[in-house]
Image (cartoon, rainbow, N blue to C red; front, top):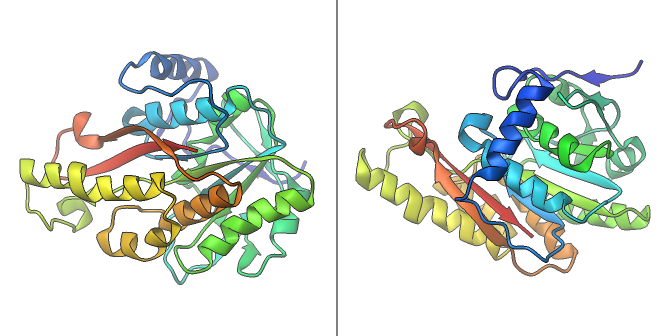
Length: 284
């Protein structure tokens, strides 16, 4: 039967049933606060990965935009909460559960990619419950159908940018077209995250919204990949900075020069608290 990655967060971080997921997606698509420019063919996106309640609308609209008028040969998803000292990994076989049916790992591409220096095969890190990638899979299955995928966990270090370039190089070598989805949340602010440089209250929320998150989003839009292996780690405004750096490097390798921000919010808007998290959607 082969390796199966179970949908461990189904019914908790996103709905259990196909019908409930469809209802949620249709609700996200009706929300007017997110506007996706029309008339363009998008090749990559940055999405958040909190539960669907908090950030599902942004992830949904980014992935829908990527699928619009597009049928790549595979979708590469990059995420995982990693330290600079951690390895970058790839899942090189298996089937991924979603409420809409399975997705199959593109084993030939993933195995070829694993021959790149600094990338290793590590099935265990993908089989454990993990939100950065799993929360995107129902959207990928819904909008792209039964498309092959590649799952990667990218560490935020100097190898992240060459790894992103290797994704594009490997795809070109194999004659494959690829769409990329990088997964990250932004600033994790407040006592729950032991990060309160601006104290509490409105001043702290304004700083996250207008300064710390804003800086990270602006660097995504202008494709500043090195920012996410250096400054972002110090400013704590991208929790999966390696995935962002690799995605931006891959986007640059495709010849794209700028991204488009489609949304930014924080969990405070849904659940007011001294501790809150930022979310953004960017398409390329």
